[in-house]
Image (cartoon, rainbow, N blue to C red; front, side, top):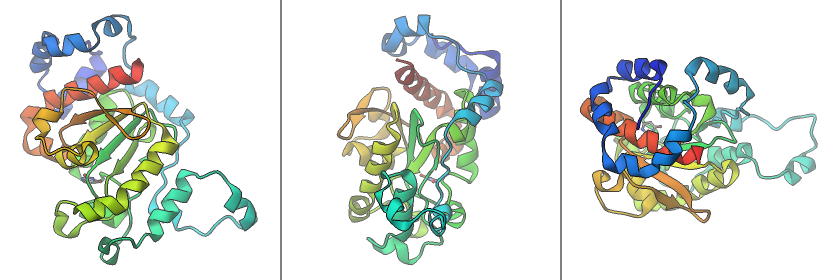
Length: 268
Ligand code: URA
């Protein structure tokens, strides 16, 4: 059963998730078969207030392109920095300098991603939009606010997950990514994945899901199941893009089911 704390129900109500639909979903055999036994034994999700203290404990990277472009630390010799283990910051520096495709010509900023370098959750969107390009941060517009609420409903804050995109630069007029752009940019996502080692990947929206899964199936067919991604077969769950949820709020309950599925994977 999807058992929610009062705090979660409050956040879900604010998000516009129709709680009666969740109750109906409680009886869905598909959801129940996912992990009935774990759900019975699993503890309640962390309330948001508690999450803020663990947010302090989380090793926060918030590796923005702007930070990546900072000059290297003067009190550390360059050779020592060269020898350092690959880190998210080094990948962010590579992204900030990237000119592998034409998108670099028109960008204000690269959008590397943000969050904890040891996050259990990696949320992957499609590509930066106008606001993200200007601020160098992922999901900062209205869709980002909704994404933050979804994360809060899971008992976490943005700083505790890692949020990235398939493309690190904004496509003109927010058009879909071209295969050649994905081919040049996806290795950065692989590097992020290898360093963060999340327990679950959540593909946000059709483009992210189809790209990561090399599929042409519609999103409705790809969600409500667990896929795997990359050399380490990281479990991958597909859900609706928050921008789509703003246009189609009736799908928010389904998105919440997807997030709950991902939460069960993390708890295993
Ligand atoms: N949409 C995305 O897919 N990613 C962002 O960062 C912002 C909007």
